Every structure is written in C-alpha cells, then in structure tokens.
Amino acid sequence: MKANLNIGLSRIQALLGVSRAAALCAIFLITLTVLFAAFWFFHSATPDTITITTGPEGSVFQTNAAKYRAILARNGVKLKILPSEGSLENLRRLVDPKFRVDVGFVQGGESDGLKIDKLFSLGSVSYAPILVFYRDVAPVDLLSGFNGKRLAIGPAGSGTQSLALTLLAANGIGPGGSTALLDLDADDAAKALLDSKVDAVFLMGESASLQTIRSLLLTPGIRMFDFTQADGYTRRIVYLNKLELPKGSIDFGKDIPDHALSLIGPTVELIAREGLDPALSDLLLEAAREVHGTAGLLRQRGEFPAPLEHEFRISSEAVRYYKSGKSFLYRSLPFWLASLVNRIIVAVVPIIVLLVPGLRLIPAFYRWRIMLRFYRWYRELLVLEQDMVTHVTPEIQKKLLERLYEIEKAVNRMKVPASFANQFYVLREHISFVRDRLIGSKQA
Image (cartoon, rainbow, N blue to C red; front, side, top):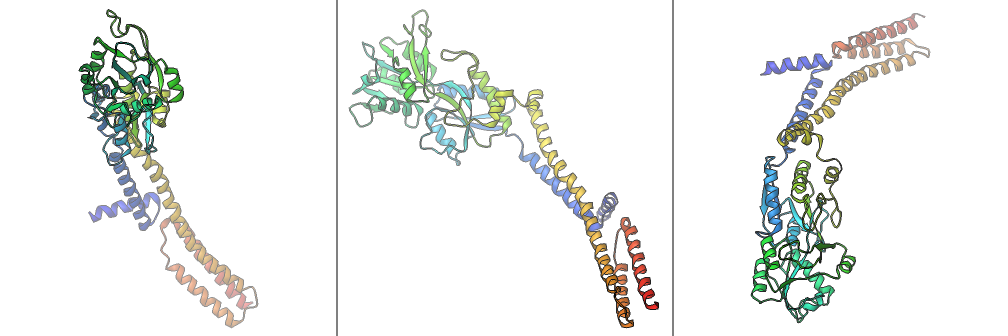
C-alpha cells in the first residue's frame, strides 16, 4: 500500500514538476473534488416519490390526482395522494414546513393571512365554479334571497366554505344572524337537501364528486342558482372568473339546464413548495396538460394548464416549460435515463470547474514559492554589493566576506527540484561573481 502511494506520488511529481508536499496537495484536491462529485451525484438524484394534497374521497381534486398518479407512474415516479378537507387545508399543509407534502391543488382567494413566500405556482389547471343548489318553487335571483334559510356551506377548512362566506358576506349574510350556516361535507349536504333538511347547498369540485353534482342536477324540484350578477362579482372579487354552463349541456334529451346559467369561480392552481426538483415540475406539468388540456363544459381545448399568476408567483421552471417544453435531455431520452445523464453532468461539471484550474494553480503556486527563495538570496547579494560601493577597509571586507560565506552556505543547503537546477546554479555563479568583485576591491 505504501509502495503504491509512493509510486503515485512520484508520478504526480513528474507530471506537475512539483515537490512531494505539492504532490500531496494535488492528491488531496483530487480526492476532495471526487468525493464532492460523488456526494452531489447521489444528492441531486430526482426523488422517486412525491406527495400531493388533494381533497375528500371522490372529489374532483382526488379524481384528478389519481390520473396524475397513473401518468407519473409511466416514468417511474410514485405519486402519494393525501386526502384533505379541500383547498384551504391543502394550502395550510403546504405552508407548514413540518408537514410532509410537495404539491397540492389550491383555488384562488385562499392565501389571506398565510405566509406563502416559500410557495410557487406551476400554473392554473382548471376553473372551480361554485355551484349553489336549492329547493324552491320559484327561481331565486339573488344570494340575498337565501337570508334566513338553512345553508350548507361546506366543511371547515375547505375552499368551498371560504368562498361561500365571502359571497354571502357581500350580500349581508354572515355567521350569528338569522341564517343557519351548516358545516356539512358534499355528500351530507346533498343528502340533507334531498331530505329537505337544508334549503340550499354550496358545492365545489374540491369537495364534491361529479356523481353528487349530477344527481342534484337531475333531481326534479332542485334548481341550480344562476349568478345573474356574475359580472359584478368578478369586478369586486378579483380572483373570480365568469363562466357559463350552456343550455342542455348536462342532458340534451331532458334539456338540463333549460337555459344557459352564469357561474362564477376562481381558478385552481397546482402549488408546490420551493425546491421542487425541475424534472418533477416538468412531469407534473406534462400530467396536467394531459388531464386538463382537453375541452370540457367550462373550458376550451388547450386552455389549461396556463401560467396565470394570481397570489402565487409562477416558478421559473414552469415559465421555461410553458415557453419551450421539457428540457433537451428529458425531451430526447426516457425519464430514468435523462435523470441519470443529468446527474452525471452535474457531478462532472464541478470536477472540470474546480479540479482542472486547481491542478494548474498548484505548479504555479509551487514555482512562485521556490522563486521567492531565490529572490531572497538575490536581495541579500544586492544589499552586500551596495555596501561595496563605498571605500572598503580590510575590516569591512572581512565582514562582507563572512556575510557572503553565510549566504553561500545557506544556498548550498537549499533543496530544489531538478526543474529549478538552472536557477540554482546561476545563483551560485552570481555568488562567486560577487566574491570575485569583493576580493578584487581589496587588491585594488
């Protein structure tokens, strides 16, 4: 082992033209750089599992997350789906650094009072209309018409309840008044409406399943609220959008709805924590494009996902994806291979950036250190020659010769590599030259 080390040191000394100590420094630098590259190779590996916070079982959020999971699985990435009460709870989980979650569905208007500077948006993926179903003989034209009624506004912690309270407050209806505001989830609220235990329910895709919404739409005697003041709501509450449910779009045969309905709702954004791996960002956006890019009742083909910036900043990786798609490696190679090549590049670049200039600096630094030693004795010779300019008495000459002898003795003790032999012998010749001048001055 020791013999092999000595051979390696000798080869590096010969290659760089440096001393044993400098060769050891070179070995240390190489080892340190390789260790750093190895650490970075494993540290920069794309995670094979991410967690998404969604909504209650059976909700649209949950259904879409299941589609995402199937798409990510094709690329070897596992998506862990975490149920929640809805959008507001998703956002609270993302804000909490102690909660293990990477991304989540969050509808607009939920960020008040929360610190969201460590979150960014991958873009809006859909509209989230709020649907109000009620039982009444005559249509209700204004939300204020529900004053004094029994209203199911969604479970606590859901975006449904948050938006419902905002809309009701704009119509002079709030907690503590004559209106009963009930914290019921989508299924319980729908059942309560069918059983005439509540007068109206507020539902959104984050918490209600498509089956629940469709059953209410098809139930005789139950109406969907038409937001005739939709334009006004979108002007006053800026994160809302005006949407239209076309006539007969639910059931052409039964003409449901029997007229076009105006709806309002925010967009749903795919929110991620800061530091999400760029490759995973691309995969999620690719899944979002596959899931949400088709035409629907309330969206046009290719409308989503879209970099619509509201409360959350759009991530730089998402901006790049929307402009040019996936990066070259991930566009040209299978995901696992592109990830491996990317990691190799990330690991090799530090070697090139740090090691090559570092190895070049070692010989230069070493030569500088050796030359400093030569310059020191040349400086001593110059000072000695300056002392010879004035009249030299025998006593002074003796002292100067003694100084020159000490310089020569010190120079002869110098250990220099063979590559500096020329400078070494030149220095010795210059010492002899100064001695001849000093002796000559005595004879003169």
